[in-house]
Length: 129
Image 1: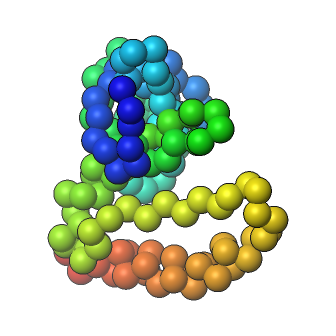
Image 2 (image 1 turned 90 degrees about the horizontal axis):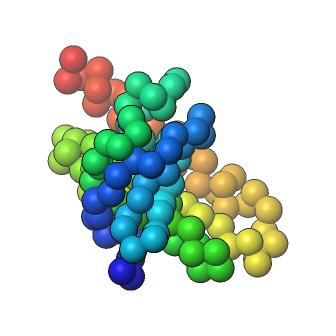
């Protein structure tokens, strides 16, 4: 099966490590849900959210063109449910190209926006409480 970034797919958790969970996507393909993508907000222990053999619906975040590794997210689906409340309609995931040597410049440029978004989200959560 050919996967595309943003595609929603189903799979089964086949293994869990402290950094994330491996998901079988069928046809001898697997992806990884990084711990930061398993739940919206801070995750102390991934085992609190995911179990081996659990069926999950996930979103394809990235596909490494060289290794074929697939990055997955559960958080995107959670975020989609609250997107209308926050006025945000997509999960933003920023990747850099390892062939272009630009260091941390893109992060420094985007940091003020990320801070602003986080504060808006926190204020929105406080207002709804």
